[in-house]
Length: 197
Image 1 (cartoon, rainbow, N blue to C red):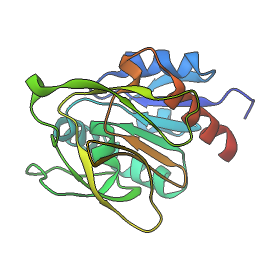
Image 2 (tube, one colour; image 1 turned 90 degrees about the vertical axis):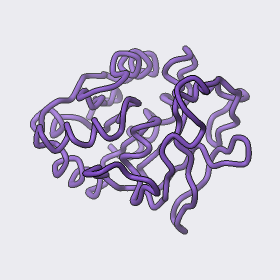
Image 3 (cartoon, rainbow, N blue to C red; image 1 turned 120 degrees about the horizontal axis):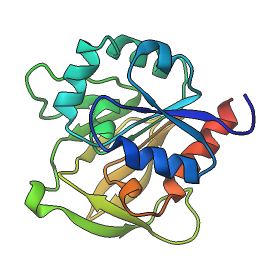
């Protein structure tokens, strides 16, 4: 790998374009990933926000769920925002019927924990590992983390709830930094990818 990592954005549903822009601004070569052969060509992957049940079902339908699980288990760096956080959880407290996860982070999440669409909000969030002050976080029907395992590091909280975690090569936020123009969380992830590759 060159100094410029190739980072994919799972492009089955969700805010793909915004992540592609954020990754490019953090000096990564960003590309959409829709098929297993595209997944095999990236050094790291972002699982975007969207609707977690829909993303789960589409990943199964398009033959992506098992390749995703295999790459994450093998240590590929992965970053999930909002719905992506839910997909990276080992367990969902309130899953929808047929909802599966990729796994990769020893955490239990609660879907839509911060409320419905009309209760969405923005907040400044201090994120461990991100310098320069708080990150602007956009919370849209956002999950929160109910609990984490021993290997999972809590790197941000908001309102007494866990909203960002890191476990080895996996990073997850319940908020959307890609919607704000503040790409420091993406830069942290790009650095994680560089460290592994």
